[in-house]
Image 1 (tube, rainbow, N blue to C red):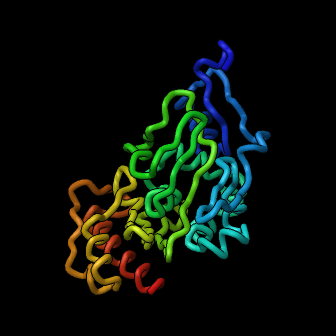
Image 2: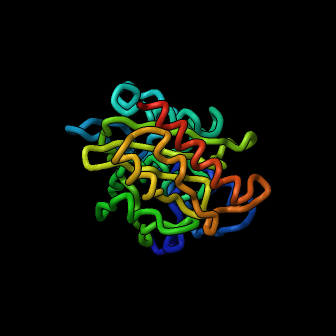
Length: 247
């Protein structure tokens, strides 16, 4: 990176960065446009893994035959993002690097136990998202691709904000060879797993087993869209619907 770009920012789809610039909330010394880097685009299968380049947009993820056939939960998730304009510009790498607490892809990365490959290392899903708009990415570290293991079964359902299509609450449930993962986006300041639900589902994969599980409201978001109590209620309702959908 040149001296002039020491305070530069990477530009992927620009779905968050461009509005941020318009509002004068950030003033980078330069924008490093990634759109012409062909090596960051594309989808491929390697053994029991689907690997998606960071600059692959949401429409491409939703439409890819290999994803529709082998990991339809991810295809459905991508198709539910925003509107056609957003889906044709936004990228998977940009979305997870931004780590918006109401974005959909973080639920897929965490719920499917993905690995994020950067220009310098591999980061497992449980270590990648660290807080509100925060990840474990270091300065000038760039996401290259995201590697998704193909689960035995998985699904994603969200309760969308009717205007933005962001998740008021979104739940991904996935059964893997080594266990079950339940990931929630939209409900808190960071995507998170519900370990109590995971343990119950490993014993009996049915909607009924989570009926008596209560979700704490202590760390959930409360805003004009929904109270913390309502979000806690939605987590259980959506989890039950996801489980019923893939039994």
